[in-house]
Figure 1: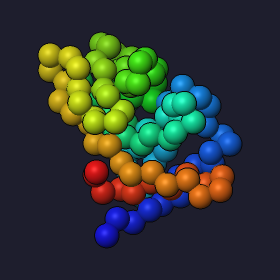
Figure 2: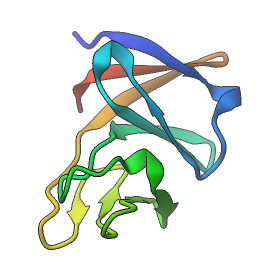
Figure 3: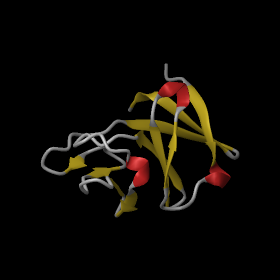
Length: 104
């Protein structure tokens, strides 16, 4: 069973901005897109860059180093050497954002 951990407050997330959090020493990125919270691995599979330093473009996280893109629903990487990233389950309970650390 997936364990959900409180990682942030919904009221602290900004639309279209990636925020890094570190539950249980796991680097997770959160993005609020059209009112929905997405949680994903906070590391580019192309060169290990931190995705929370990048931006959101058309539903994808864009790595700030070389522009690799990652679909925030499927985790698919779009760049010649970018593999998929982990996508995590999210629950919002009131103002609390909880993330399940097992992959979907």
